Length: 402
Image (cartoon, rainbow, N blue to C red; front, side, top):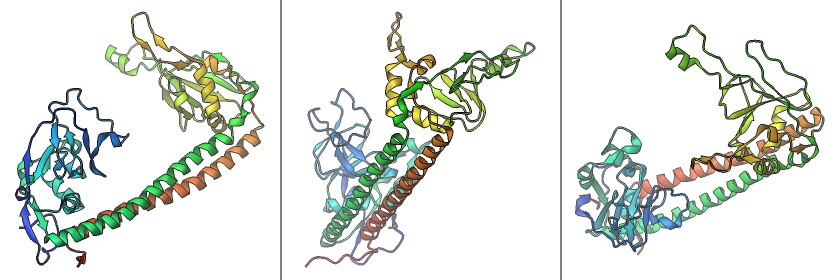
């Protein structure tokens, strides 16, 4: 029987259909058991053990399925991504999962590694179907006849013991690198803030001047101390356009941003929603378009406006928090005029650019280190997957303990 593996069956190993080792069932829990979830990277684990699972469980858990230690649990829509595994926990899982009770003699650790190997993930993809990959469904009938490689019991235990040791070391290496990347990310943020944050809360006020610009008369910008605010609007439909054409071309509420303007999302600026325009274009009416004068470097000003001190000043000036008389919730947004009340010290242009260069160099060094870390994690995961595949298919001969 040909299976997902590429080579011949090793001597002394057998090939058995999955149905001979696992039987699908559906026993309902009583809703008091621990809620379990199936992760691509971990298998079956308590849902409460992770804070990155945003799937909301039903309020009524009476239809959730009971899972016992040793059961095979399969997320039928993501099995091809590796979302299946042998459970080491008692609990309940979503009714959308497949739950199989072990009926054969497979070592559950070996079965876990085997079914989550790359060869079997590819097999799950081949027997799943649907319109889009994230909506593929595993065919239970074809899954039931999936050929399993079954070494002798002692060999199963030897392979599982070996993989437990080796993958634990690789996982520890990955965890250390991920911790390092978190620290580097924090250092990058701190570097970006420390270089320019001291300018906020001192010096002169960040002044703006408002002037409606008539697109038919062309841009009329005044020389200002720091920034001007563009309320130059988009193209209006021509009088001779048809009604449908006018609906499509009426961009008169949108604002024009030119290269080098600071574009600020008035509802998301306090979350970092601002930056320097790389080209000319139109932006939402909810955005503000700020044009620096020749005395201000746009990238420097943008960096200042993303610092925690500046953000905290913006938060203090947010408007629209609360509900309207009709009960609708107002979205808080920063008033552009309120930005003008924020104090900021503006050094000479050459100092601004020197600070930016120092900042860019510091961030570049940190990002280089982060790229090395990401590459190391990627290679470690590839090594882990290759090691598991080689061991469970017999390509790597694991010596049995005496």
